[in-house]
Image 1 (cartoon, rainbow, N blue to C red):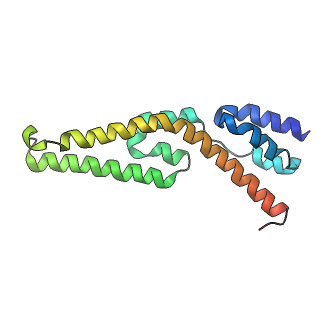
Image 2 (cartoon, one colour):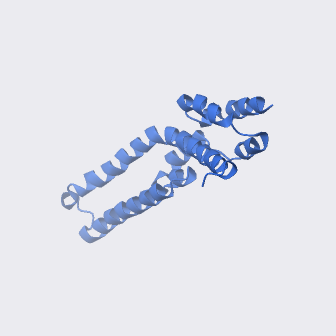
Image 3 (cartoon, helix red, strand yellow):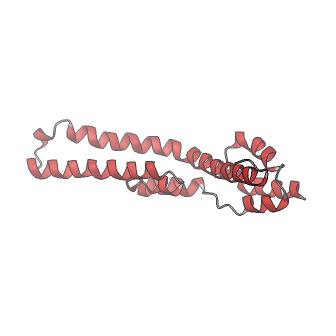
Length: 151
């Protein structure tokens, strides 16, 4: 019975987990009882497609990182992007938008934002899957430690 539950869980979430880790995850889940498996099944996993949409449309707010549970990186995105935009605005107001005075500031800061955006686009999909795997592994580890008497 538990083997069927594991198959159903893996089948339902195969797109939300790293493909190369599914066999090891299946192995870990086979040692759980049926009631312990029910706890794993009820975990809410994040969808890589939603994370990608958040990255494309709300990247400057760091929402895609908050969504997958990387709160520190989400705050770093938010802080850096607000800081860069504030510098651009203040630089524009102080120098009254003179293209000659902008120099490297007008090139470097937007280029940094673009590079960071491209890196996020390429990494958010896999980062979401890894965050889901970490969530399952942490839950399984807590079950092992509590039910097996290891603290």
